[in-house]
Image 1 (spheres, rainbow, N blue to C red):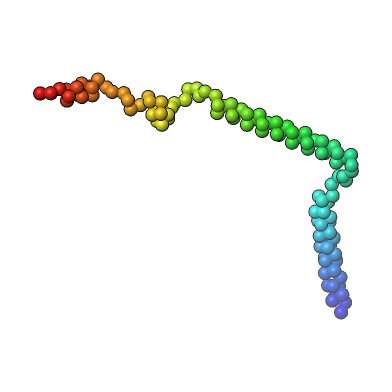
Image 2 (cartoon, rainbow, N blue to C red):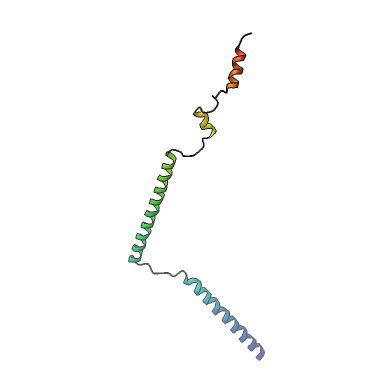
Length: 111
């Protein structure tokens, strides 16, 4: 019976140590959920910073959008025309080489 009490005491001590460690770990885990208290002044300061950042972001996006539009509307420089653009501008397909012209003229001659 004395040995059983000794074993129970040691098991209880080990269990207490594990429980204490678990409580400490839980307290550390919960500590990250406790931040700075929000007061009216701290909220108003945060809101001003947030609105300033949002306005700056909007300005950057607007500037980027305008630059994109101006690039799209502006003349292209040093870009090759596509086949379709060449065709639409009449730069392809209507050219007649002299050899083809001579063959056509010879075919038209009678006799």
